[in-house]
Picture 1 (cartoon, rainbow, N blue to C red):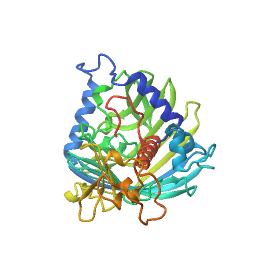
Picture 2: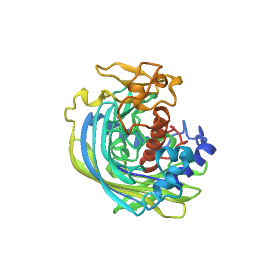
Picture 3: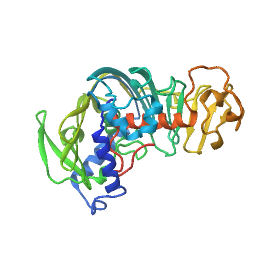
Picture 4: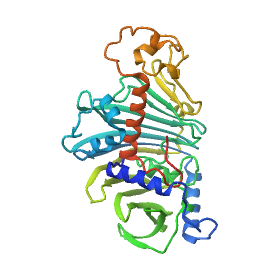
Length: 394
């Protein structure tokens, strides 16, 4: 996973979103392009050969000094205060490097992704381990923090409204999804038909490659594919106002069943002035092609106590023992997590908090903070900028 961040980059993405949302470069659709057609055919052929796969890899991630505090500045002063971030605090105080063990399973249009990441705890002023799980079973996408994620110390779950994988546009999964599901609309990072082949070429690792380009207002993506290796993507560049803000390289090995399999990738997010904000280097330790993957791998059952935001059904609830739901009403805004779990529906503010010391974060406000912080974090370190064709995940 892994892969990409931005503070200034993320803010640049918002500007791009405002300027280019829902835009598509004119004249791309319906025009024959031999390179695009050949790439799409090769990707579809490889998708048909690889019906399932499992991967494990480790990511070495380095976050630049001050990157997180700049990224979180978009959350607003009130939310920063609720998170425990002190005015003027520099997060992290120095460059910070750590490992992210990751795993990925694929079967048809079903996907599971797990990573053991780290999040900044503003209350403890240190990085803490945070497990993240993401599944898509072909119709429903869920994401889950089973041990919580700062500032929440309770489990957090999301049911996403789109009928697509929530991490389809994640930099972390880009190499695997481009390799094996680049033509599957619910999983692909982008639609290759939105790109143009303008004749650009480059020699990368001694192999002649062809450039594909997509322009969206001030934002541009440039991908290089290798025709001799079934049009695998070997390099990706992202620019805003012609300034490089993201770059990725992918290495492959030949595989009898799959053709070509990604084994290493590197990504950097940069500020417009060229400073590296976050760098990630992933190395695959194990993979299997067309292995049996049980259907249960693509389901998440939220544990009792999990605070769930169901964006598909537009409900908020805490999972009760036995699997029931303690619905959270709008009238309960201002209640703590403990008040919610220790009261009946609609009565959280009418009862006194019982026990569970240290859980005094406002439950509704806290979930908003958690959602914003988690989304900023994942977008900032691993998501492509919002507002481009295809949108961004919730």
